[in-house]
Length: 146
Image (cartoon, rainbow, N blue to C red):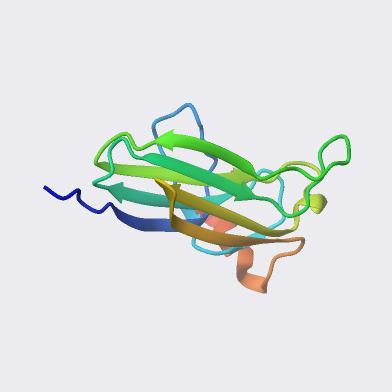
């Protein structure tokens, strides 16, 4: 019998509430966007749903803009591997901005590959100032970031 082809769907992308890596809960979407304001501790990325791929190898990579480490060297992309845990699995790939935020502006590309086949690719533009006047509307009232 032929092996089923995995089904992949990006369910959301943009700005999320803070994610706890130790929790089973995925972060909640706050605002769908690829334009990210350069603010300390802002969480952004995407969630994908992967079906029919239990035990497949998932490889993720976050390409930062030319951010230097403490010794002045440009940081390598952040890479990792994970195995798909169930036949209907949600996976969050994201990052957050740390101080000094001014050095984190530019394109942040996030990719996911399943058994060496690219399944998700999204670039977020981190900007020093809000990209348009209404960019922070999601922070008003009940939807405060913190």
